[in-house]
Length: 221
Image (cartoon, rainbow, N blue to C red; front, side, top):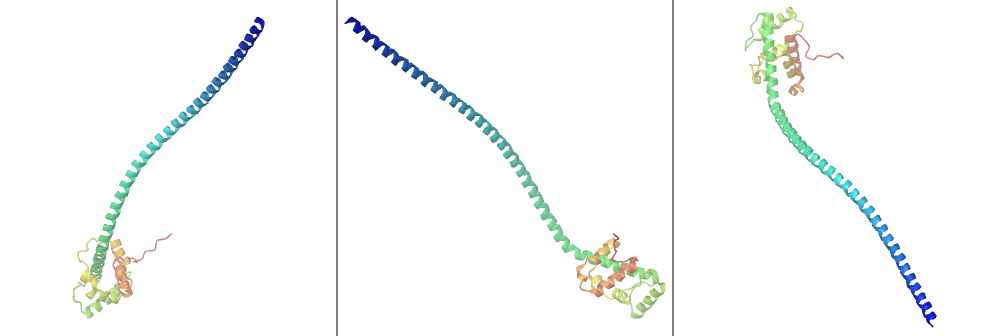
């Protein structure tokens, strides 16, 4: 009877030992699984930290670029405002020139007429007066033909000088500083004579008579 009890106790003890060993092994595996999971999470956290650090650097770079663009935009706006002011100023100057140019052209054309009268006096010795009879004008014309200047003065141009035309009425007689180039520009660029071929030809004749050079200069290539 005692022997049977001992065997039963031994079996019970072995069973408990086996259960304990199984529990310990299972617990060991569970601990290892947890450690593996923790390691994987640590690696993920490390990667996420690296990614966050890269994103922080990108954000910092973008902030610097944004600040640079803000400064650049401010500078560009300032330049644009300056350009607008300059354009407005230039536009005002153009409008002023549009108002002044016709008067300036008349001034320079008046200078041409005065120069032509002085040239006639130099060539013929006859002083030009405001009222010139047709007989005197005919004598001047014939005298000029005998003098044979390089560029002849036409009879129409002589009559134009003798008559009180628009240029002599409106042109300022104080055009003392007009150069040959100024007068040439006043004749070639004045749109008011584009529809008046007769007046344009007379002014062309007067220019070439006074300055002994063609009005329209051809530039060789």
